[in-house]
Image 1 (cartoon, one colour):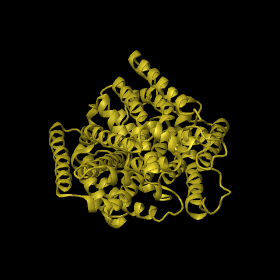
Image 2 (image 1 turned 135 degrees about the horizontal axis):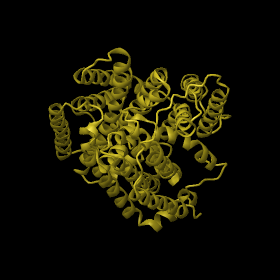
Image 3 (image 1 turned 90 degrees about the vertical axis):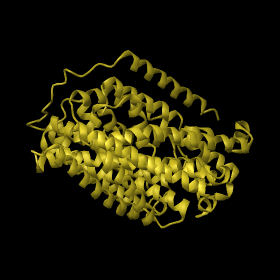
Image 4 (image 1 turned 180 degrees about the vertical axis):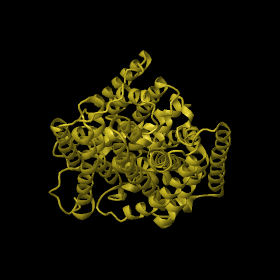
Length: 527
């Protein structure tokens, strides 16, 4: 199975890949030269992003190669239940656009730790900066790189360490040269390419199966239900209902890699429209990512437990020669977007919140950009090492590893940001305790679950999404108690009288998106 794609590649495929790589680097270089003339930093794209740049950039960051492999894999094994992870996200995108983004933009910050630092002081900013860096390094860079490594290994049959090294060097050069603006510009093109390739794959697959009604007839009836029974072994509804929000708040509303694009918006409305746009793009998850997996389960049932191969099996068997080169381009495109945005976020947090704040407060723009680039290089090395280590986790599929890791990193962030935004009585002591001790507790449970007492051997564990919810509940109660019993509460609140208002256009578009998502839930629970 390893070399099926490689054997089918022609000279035309290699020419397409080579041209594509050259175009990517040229765009990065051109943007970099323009940027240096304007003296903008590498980080916030000079507050110049429009809604479509923001939407495609956030989606590009969100849709790693893991989405292509993992959603197709889970579609192959369990049907459309994974659609919840894209469509339930609407609630949290709404929260980001209407509640979090206006406050972030009003406080004129460029990182999440800087925002918390304005409220609770330097100690909070430093704790959150280090934790944000760990989170970006593990949940974005290393997991994204790991899934990309799996992909390259499937295509070329080379070892994991070679796959991830090549990928990270290319993405590093790109980020090093052009920064966020280059990534944002290229993402629009890359995401259109991704949509075209994946829709073509679904269309060819449906044609081969004999149409939608034939597909429904050939799959188990529960394949088409978003809501599964409470005793379902894979994704019971209580686990998704309670556990997914913990990760989603941390992921969409507080994660530097996601929020960075909104903070780089021309104004609040463009930022909100960008968030709305990613919601519409997420509606496409079924035809783009999950449907190829369901089609593969009908066309190639012999894969059995190797469901991670579903997407690439469809590609090699359905696409004509010449198209395979385009598919590899899409994979490279998505990888560069994810790894590039993550490296950029890592360098932004380190440079702004640790280097400028603690080490060299008088740093010039040139020194900041230099430090950002050193951080990118260090991030590349760490990410390669962690990705190789993740390759040694056994007994979990790709999708579950992703969701579980995010679920254990998320609780403390979700608690701290939700309380800070919604409850003015939250104190510095509660925030710092949750971010330090709460995070340590959450990560300790995660290590027990994934490595020391793995769930496939020790079956007494609840679903990993429920564990994430239980940790969130414990930390939330603890933070409230600490705030209430604090004798000398430090709340240190910034005045937020100048929070910009949300326009009518944005409200109407979110209402329409909400109706679309509700319709999908009604349609896909008919069995």
